[in-house]
Image (cartoon, rainbow, N blue to C red):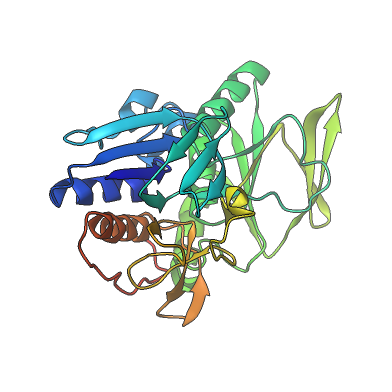
Length: 321
């Protein structure tokens, strides 16, 4: 039995753990374009201000330990479900008997003039955080604007402030951290951010980023201009689905799965924030970036790949702040 897992995030890690616990004895190949793989993603903002080193963000265990595993550093470019083949950027072709798609999501830039170019970053990977830190040191950055007041934006703002920068957090909704926090909780958290020195602006959007000699100079927020040399964009993510074009895998916003997290194609499962599922509280289909949901999905998918028949419990769009 040959299993291929695309992705090295927590959904993939949980799947590997479940497979090992179930006594899986086949060959497992993990394909990832992240370097390094297998790290604790919630810790990456701490790389910005040096609270943690890259080594300290790595998982304390090897997810492939105890398995006949192979780690391939590459990018999947296409999937052929009829031939059960994955095409890689290196032109290598992998065959599989069972496949888990745990490709995660990528940040989406809002339509703001001037965002393209030097000094604008997203914060999704350890490499992103290290690039932000290096830019701050190289350019002697004094002020930053963070676009997006969700969990990622708040963590980025806190890290930038700890790094000694003047920080402005911009959120288009009336309060930050939606939907993880209600208005009352968000008010308390906003106050604590302000006490830490972060300027919090809600109910407004960025309209333009101006540059001088190619470098960020200011950000227009509503009628005001905020001086800054760095912008972090945390306004949302989109599932990584590009490699599925031309395949027969069904997807809308994310990959569609049944209660066993199996796709419409035989032998293929999906887990994590590449999956579109029905959220029980709001009774609507959605994609969740929550760590806890990714872990739960990975465990179910891994057990099912190993030959069990597990059902995914109801997922809820809730968070811990």
